[in-house]
Amino acid sequence: MTLAALVIVLLAIVTYLLVRSGELRTWHVVLVGLLGIYLDRIHWTDPIIAAVTWLAQGLTHAT
Image 1 (cartoon, one colour):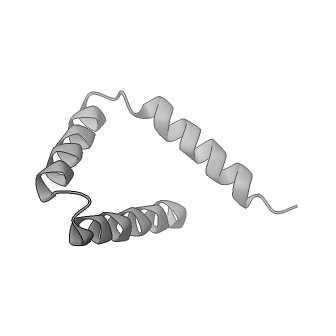
Image 2 (cartoon, helix red, strand yellow):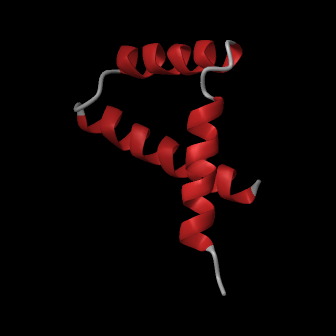
Image 3 (tube, rainbow, N blue to C red):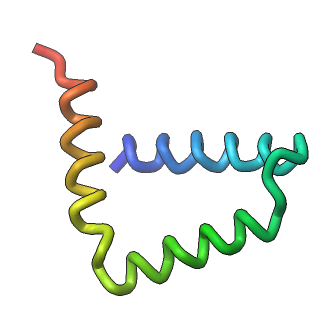
């Protein structure tokens, strides 16, 4: 759960910096956020979440 929170914070910072620099418009962020909420409601994100979780666990696996 803490890895998910870290990824959310990182993405929020990157989004803020892109909006602030003018590279990304505020309405782009709103549309992508709405798309993410919609995809989450219809459960199309389950394979994506599984892939990201698998990749994050593989990168942070300590033997």
